[in-house]
Length: 304
Ligand code: OGA
Ligand code: MN
Image 1: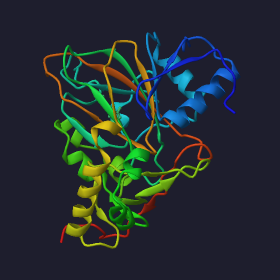
Image 2: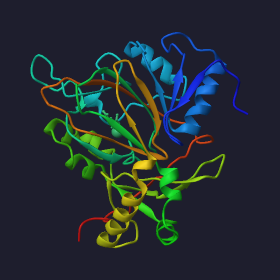
Image 3: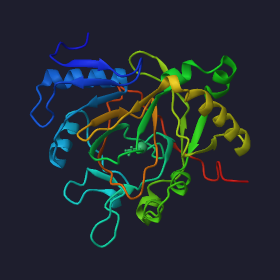
Image 4: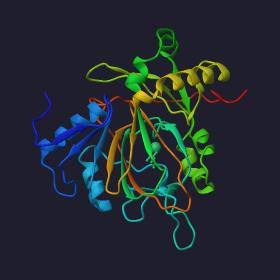
């Protein structure tokens, strides 16, 4: 049974995304509230909190209640004051250098950290400045995506492992500063494989694990066949009815579970300002769907 709390919740979508009303996340939270939030997160995948006023430290402290914080390979996007905070923005500092990652371009359906052997699947995104239009973020429920696959297609992906390569994702970014990574970051991101179908550790419910910006094929299939199969799966798994579209307001904090969702972002006017702060955390493998990464065998998925 979920713990009793004073939290009020409001579903934002039939299976994915729920607004949590009430908590003032800058104040200390009691253990029952934290337990209730963990439970809601594992069930809904996406949690929305409105009207939050958080310093970087408060954001990090809140997220640390939900799982160990992780510093990502993008140390170049880290906040100078709290290194666990990633800055996502199109803004530049006084010298014309980007203050964070991901610019103003479109981001296609992806799952954060899918290029890691052990992805930290918990994510939090906090809105500080927003453009008047665009820059909207959408999440898709890959439990529903799995359930919707025609039986034959489901059989063809079951037991298969996708090959995920950060280099492929980087090539899709619009700015040099996002595309170029340090030698150290490159060394930490060799191609990996993950099973495309996963089960929830408590309920056994199955879901897909996908990332359209990062997959380059399927292990043990020739590249063209693997990509064609993935394309069919992406098409089928990202139907509108499985998608929650978030309309950002300043002060929104959104948490999501990358283990059974993907998200995408629409582009926005480069002359507009958008500033988001982002946390990455490890989720409890007993309560959340976990990818099962392995290093790809070298040469796998390379273009032939
Ligand atoms: C992310 C991400 C999209 C956005 O934080 O991982 O993809 O809306 N952000 O900025
Ligand atoms: Mn992302």
